[in-house]
Length: 157
Image (cartoon, rainbow, N blue to C red; front, side, top):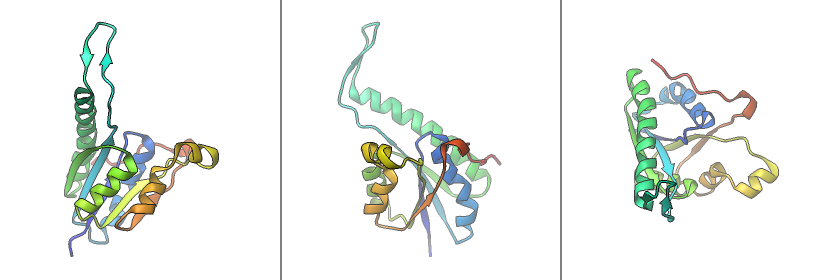
């Protein structure tokens, strides 16, 4: 049975902690990993101090380019360790885009970190993890983390 794991990342040290569990979940017969970054959908045009106009499409393309480069760095390290890895960027609201990606690509499990927000902060800002848990079409493995202990996961070969 082919198993496909989705690991959403957001360029934070918190999200990278999910990569630390790859060796353990791979023991269960994982065939493919997808690293996903969700970039914000942008509707406003920016005019820089120099007068340059940057359209929403240009801004999104720039975010996607940075996201692809970031994801590819992690993917290369995982590939060196023998994992089949692809990278993807989606545009939109993070929880919705993660769930949609999982549905469209028949993901077997989502592995992601929580950012450790609780109480009023979580209430006001919402929680990507909670949104994914509530609507995911597959199991979700949440890797907890705490601000004072967060550091990038060691994934170098």
